[in-house]
Length: 411
Ligand code: ZN
Image 1 (cartoon, helix red, strand yellow):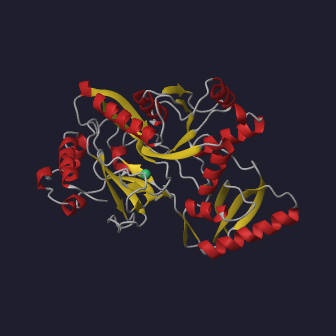
Image 2 (image 1 turned 120 degrees about the horizontal axis):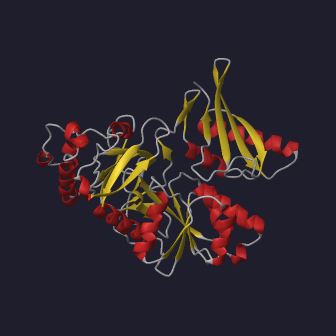
């Protein structure tokens, strides 16, 4: 993305700060930040991988003295060590400012009541939503995840106007509210939906069942947390806070910048972070820059919806499959819901893929026909044929955490 002279000087300062910590002192040994005079110079610096950050465990990323660190967050490690990110008071304040700016962009004000359902703990979700709401002057309702019964009660009794949730939990709440017939007692107007890839069909369902407008928020624990960008009322991409970060979009295979507007992986350099500055951090999130000005008039550039992760793509029978393409494909077929589950196995020396989808149709003939349609569409659009299996509405597992839709059983 564009690198202004101001950004370049911010980048140089940030590299200098980062090198005060053990991790980047070693990694950038022999590099003088003052020698970086152009975007090309900067792009010659090595990318930082999540695996690299794990090696800095526990506090190798810390770039300031101990007395300036006020908080630790950590990204969960499903494999191996977690990544620990130390924050200074200024980092915490900067994060609050960015998050409050997200709420403002979504039209949320200090008269709103913000029900926060993401989790609280070492990870950054719930507490970020809370920091931003308090900074804005809104009323934060720190529910955390789960206990749907109590969530709906609080939503009614406290007249919550904003729901913060993952897309799968927002869908679960929408379905429960519908099932209980309490929708006319719900005062929600807006939803701020974070940290998950989700399709247009799921968005429409949540939006119409709850009668609210939805905003996508972006961020990751390694870089403050959620709140580094959000979609505006026009819903045409997420604006990114380029006064705090320099963003690149690279080809995940070659590591080189992709042409503007093409899909690639987001790489982030922090410009103001003190506790643990990151330089050229690979997010693994796939999206594209949206060229041109947004109708809302915001000067902040935009990226499209996150279409998946570069390490989520699965190869079946030689074909790359992105979860987002499956979303799109199913969204275009009548009588198929937004929920699905893919199982990939290996039988008789060949890859085998089973696609489970939900449908309201009940008769075996209708379901059989629909399975054929799904298989044909897959062959036409993705160039491989799965075995499609119809399930009833609500039969596939829902999750309060990130929904794992693709299960790869191959070894
Ligand atoms: Zn906009």
